[in-house]
Length: 371
Ligand SMILES: Cc1cc2nc3c(=O)[nH]c(=O)nc-3n(C[C@H](O)[C@H](O)[C@H](O)COP(=O)(O)O)c2cc1C
Image (cartoon, rainbow, N blue to C red; front, side, top):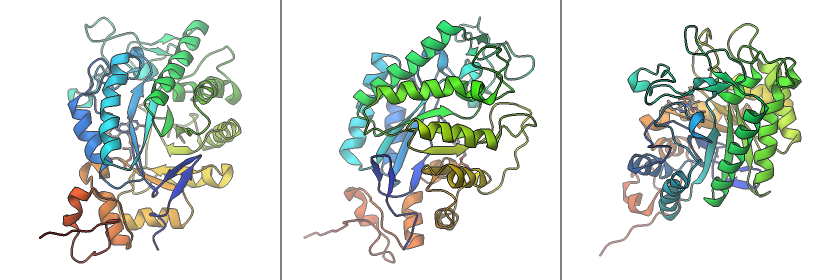
């Protein structure tokens, strides 16, 4: 029996298995609105047999986009574009779909990776002034962001709430709040990015205040049955930066507020980071959060092999595994994992005839007949 293919409960959301497709920016939206690329991209990932598809970082405001091409959920056009895609997915795939609500903070106004990823100056036609906890740029020599004053903080909180309300209208199955990878909420948590002297900076408790306020506001805006959870960076990988002790404290505080799960990533706040990248390199952080906090925990980062994924679940290091690059490389990864682990997986009936002869019971409910 494969434990990877056992169902998982995240709050009141039941997942068919423990494979999560990671949020992955596509930098291909227009004014935040998804188009045919998203239909193709999310459409084929939705047919993968994974238990949960997390839509890419979705900006809660235009200023909160990383690049001009980021997906957003701040306008009626954004909402209509996503409604079209979700309707198609719902028609053809049983997968649960969550959305990652995000604000880029000081990493906003950037070029897409395939254009080099540099900061776009705020005076450029396609650039804008980034906003952040403090007037500290992400990298030396970059244009500093505008520190958020109390009206700005209220505006950002409200933007998260409005985006969450739109997501609820779209019938989304779960919401992940992006507090990782050096974006706005992580910038509040990290002493490397947050030098505020008001109640939102300084002590751990004060640095956690704004991310927790955003969580509370989003949680309160959603129906009780909709799980809301948070993606965190467990460490900045920089001395004196945000670390795993802070992450455990943050996760405890989130749990007390009704957070449904924790998704444990790392890094992103500083170009000084030194990451010992290797297979499953972030899993020990997920394991510690799971052991100490007890929330359903999702591990991510160079999880590429079915046996590796199975072992992470079997050892109790995490409750679910999340894959990004491996899913782009092989969107049928869950099928291959099920075959490898002797499990069954959902596949569209149109593809049932592809079931390999040596895996006669791979696709749930598969039957074929012809005259
Ligand atoms: C193309 C691409 C886009 C990404 N976009 C996001 C994103 O929107 N939100 C996020 O939290 N992480 C994003 N990430 C990070 C992944 O979700 C994941 O944490 C990271 O790639 C490590 O997992 P992997 O080793 O399975 O790729 C992205 C990664 C890739 C490769």
